[in-house]
Amino acid sequence: MRKTYRLLRAHVLQRLIPRSRVAFNPRKPVEVVGYLSMAVGVGESARLCAGALSEAGRTISLSDVSTHPDANSFPGWAPPRAPSEPPGSRIWHLNPPMLPRAILKKGVTNFTRAFNIGYFAWELEVVPAEWRNAMHYMNAVFVPSEFTRRTIAPLTKAPVIVVPHPVTEAAATEGMREKFGIERDAFLVSFIFSAGSSINRKNPRAVIEAFRIFAAEAPSAFLLMKASGDVNKDEALRALVASVAGDARIRIVTDRLSNADVNGLIRSSQAYLSLHRSEGFGLTVAEAIMQRTPVISTSWSGTADFCDPDNSWLVASPLIPVVDTHPEFAGLDGAVWADPSPQAAAAHLSEIYRAPELAREKAEKARAFLLRYLAENSYEKALQTLAAMQSS
Image 1 (cartoon, rainbow, N blue to C red):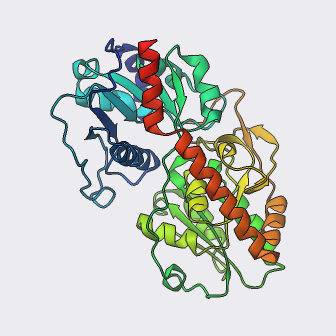
Image 2: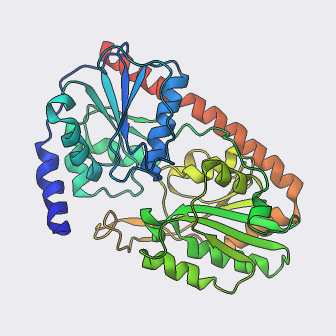
């Protein structure tokens, strides 16, 4: 039944959704639509968008279309100014497979009464048929990186504008080492990932392998990985946790942590290690940079917009065919992603371990670069670009 629904949604429902003919009006309120009360990446994307637009002075409204609401994910924040008129435009922080249900929930007629902007975060250079079918009904598309823009732009005549996630230096909980029993003088390496968005893409096994190579020369080293997911329901995550059982220097945490706790964990780390196979943006990498933590990152895909050899430790990676059972990535002919070397990553860890002052200087460069990059590519500037396109 689920497979039949996916086929119906991808090839029928996506084609039936009409495109709005409403022009973009920069003076009217903006509605942010998404999984606002869910602890998932697209939910965080929507929350970051709402905060950035509100801070920029835009009049906004929120529409939560969460399938599994969690009151702890979005605790009651509301825009400071409630709009007195219907929205002129909407930003849909939902990938195409999520859109038909959300659009039907809000009403197709309602959908066509505003200028609709899709915020699409795709992680590969080959796009599934469902995504291609969804392009026809968006008036504009925002994407988190130049990597994604190059992939999406040929599929639509609508404007495609790069708008990175508006990462900020958010609150960070003190004492996270003590919370997890990590020695004060331990060389802490961290990695944060969601198992639900393809554990193969996030590639935590390579992180473990790199750490074990490095730890042979660093007796104080400790790896803490925070995974979002349910070990009772996710076989791959359960196998990953089992693979480090009995290793006193590696811990995988699956407990629910607040954003401040996660930031505190990253801030208290000597290095953040992301050996992702592909990222549409690389939110946790950007968050680590904002917390002034030295970053080791795969040298491919979305993170390339803000990670370079001057500010990060990059792991050059050959590209290999995508092999994955995740429904978004299964069966994509010709799709490739990175295969970063754990040995190269371990060498970078050693470099940071041996020269901590130089590592901190490099991390400061990364933060300064990221701040400039985010300011130059904000939601507000993207909306101004749309307004200029309408008037030309």
